[in-house]
Length: 231
Image 1: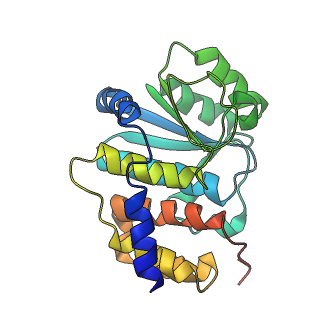
Image 2: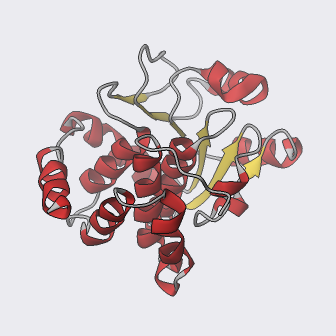
């Protein structure tokens, strides 16, 4: 019953992102070769889920993609596909700057102003405004003008939800829903780590598309419930 309800909810919101915004994102993604995805300081489940989902999706398009986080993320999120590959700016500043400067497209998720990425990355974002294309994917109030394309929907529960709908809009064929719906349904009954860790450790999770769905799903329901992840 819950699965049916969730599916109807997803179907109702498929077009949550304006098609004009998707049309603006398409050419930027098409010409990009090296993409850096950035999320906010003290990354939470939504920050990690949205940034990693975007990374895995872009990898399906044969892009070189790195995620840079301002500081360490919680250890209970380290099991997420690709999380251990994240570059932590505070600990690897030189490497992080190399990746940032080499990128020809910047995607920021789950924050709406440069200062929320910390002093170092925030200043870098300010310095490249106008010289590198920036896409913002966020659900907080009062977005600044730091991005060339701003996907901002404060009525959405999470940035991960927006990433999910953006991916659907950018794909020529419809993104398969069963994996995401199954994870969402399980999340209603048990903590996030219990419902998804098995899926993430499976061979199927090595597929970038599946990893993107898992990451997006975790971000989606991390904002809806608090999970005890010590287990």
